[in-house]
Length: 351
Ligand SMILES: [Zn+2]
Image (cartoon, rainbow, N blue to C red):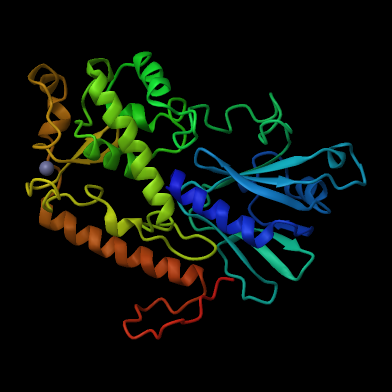
């Protein structure tokens, strides 16, 4: 699932592509995609609005829309926000109207300038909502979208200081891996960057938050901010179906532990391990990320499990990677076969 860096990349791409564009039509062929409206009332509420900007909260996009001016049912006269949760396979593209449509596109917003913003979603878990907007926060006004947005702290904002992080951590208990994934604790961190931050901070994913010493908290704070900022810089990790309107990211080539089970740790050379924590695969180096003996006992079940041989797992990962790369190419309207001889400046297709 796209995490903070991936969603931030999409927000930045979209901002450049659609800020100032006016929406003149809306079509949705899979009603569950819309969490706030049925397709017809949704179209009525969004048509005529101009995109004012694009932001992000946690793993969701916020697309800010101006009032229509016409008033209508009253909703049209207030500023609105479109929340977009991509979930597993959601993708957004901005293309000329004439670009061939494929069957995985489930929402189309036609722009008055001859382009369309298309929401494409193979698994159909993505969710989009349209709400009146709080002018202060840019988020849905209180009570309008209960439970839709993450409540946790944004780790890349300026006031997310070590002191603030220490306060947040001191109120928590439980395994670090599960805590980092909790969107009411931190907004935007998912499986990839939780594993990467813990490796950078040399903290075991099963370590209990209550046992962290001041130095541990400082290293984890720094690791989280560094890995997320680097990933934003590299346009996110294009593993699975994530791609942005202006193309894939490259952070997947710089990950130290995620999906590297059995490969050597970049720090000590020992094999990266994979275990399952709270149902999520978790990657770490058991040499660089130590667990105290008393905690090892409570984590015994997770640590003992070895479901699949490393070689078999690597083969399956490689096959999954190839399949995902070819799905992303299809999504962009490119030839899905890997092009080893692609000339420089080959057509991008998407924009
Ligand atoms: Zn190591």
